[in-house]
Image 1 (cartoon, rainbow, N blue to C red):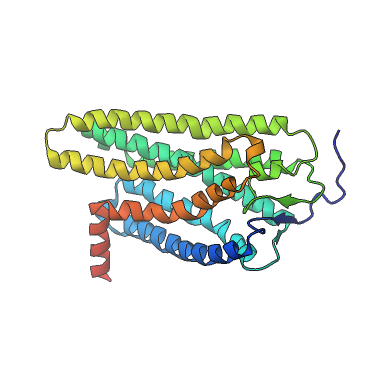
Image 2: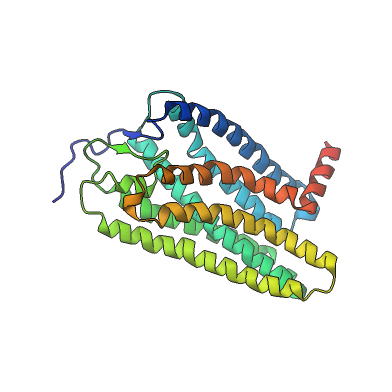
Length: 308
């Protein structure tokens, strides 16, 4: 039986960590620092990828796309998160929640696809080095980037529209720190079996399948690298691949914990901390991982600093 809701577009309350005010004050300061670090780090990646001719190759083209996704991803949720953690008012308007949901899903899905593309790019570079320039030509790279952003947009339009059509009645308290699908499902006053199945299918297609492709790519890469006789060649190949694997582990390890866990477990605070990790921590660590472990990026940073 579906309950009729008289205020279908009323404000939501993002519960966050309301039961632990002291924790919210600590998180406010930590998240603010992480947000500025995310902005600075990813802007540097984008800047050096654009300015340095030596980085005008597919790997850094996709990396700059990933940095742009992370910048927009964090900006779609962290400002609201900071407002909620700072004071007692934790409301977000229906339009604000809907916009956050659309952008959140769009950019999250785009990142999933970009990580797969980056893994395939590394596979071609290591396993087929002589054909790399021919295969990964600029036109294909642009098409792949557009594909990633397009798939993210389509997934967001479908999943968000389905979620927002649910009748949200009663207390309208979102037991989360952001407006995302698993938390909003909890508020529905009707049967959510269909949307849960839709979310599970989307999660398998956009999380499990890409992860299998990534791991398969790096399995093939590992075999190819071990056949390289030069120790320096092995080190360079493993260096760029390990950086990407670290990013994949951080992102997929937390996102799958939220979107693939059973519905009745999502109310636990474990889900909130996982969301906090992939919305705040991972986008900050991505540029650090790539710059600290990548000699080409560090060299580009040095050249950029000298030219200024």
